[in-house]
Amino acid sequence: MPSAKPDSQHGALPGFGEASAKKAAPAPHYLGHRERLRTRFLEGESDALPDYELLELILFRTLPRGDVKPLAKALLATFGSFAEVLAAPVERLVEIKGVKEATATDFKVVEAAARRFAKGAITKRPVLASWSAVVDYCRTAMAFDDRERFRILFLDKKNGLIADEVQQTGTVDHTPVYPREVMRRALELRATALILVHNHPSGDPTPSRADIEMTRTLVEVARPLGIEIHDHVIVGREGHASFRGLKLI
Image (cartoon, rainbow, N blue to C red):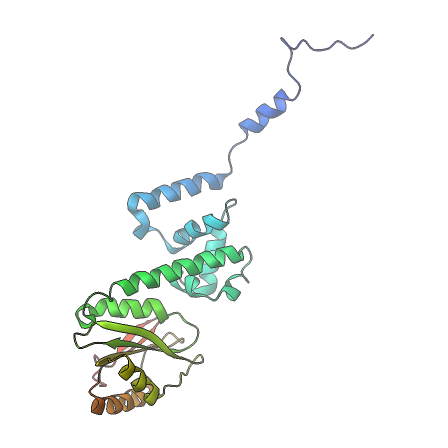
């Protein structure tokens, strides 16, 4: 005898049981975590978030599915801190399993935004009147670079910022500085004062003997030209050193 067909009004519809099972499946655990983390951030808890959770928020953009907490912690373990993750070269970031090029680009955008924000604090006021902002900007801009860079802040008669330029880029432990080129540029910009800045990729901002000698040479060359060197600041992961504060100039 042919098998009886189920009554569509009383029997189960084909596939109905499978659809119900799918609907009843619990949502992935990471979805709730993402929503809770976003809520905490938007409610003003950003300062209280640990570094790995702040990294997770950035990772959410380019990694829309999956638990990114292990990746955030792996990045911190590799590079050392939130700031060092953002400052890491793209080619090193993408070596970490799970980091896409788009993710590395997001990190660099956040890094650039932080630099622009820090620079804004010193561009519309006398530099010497906002010294902590100057140091913050210098550290944001250079403290985590993997090569030495020599930067100059050119100031006018009122100590306003005329220009902020990287003059030289060197190796992991040396940057050549040419006094003639520094003074030529200062005269071109009609600067009357300079703040010298460079970084120590080793992390320790303690001035070396070469740093001290180079600074004294620049001071001597600048004096007859009517240009004052207010300070030489060395920045590194472990803090900063001021030649003026150390009474080295």
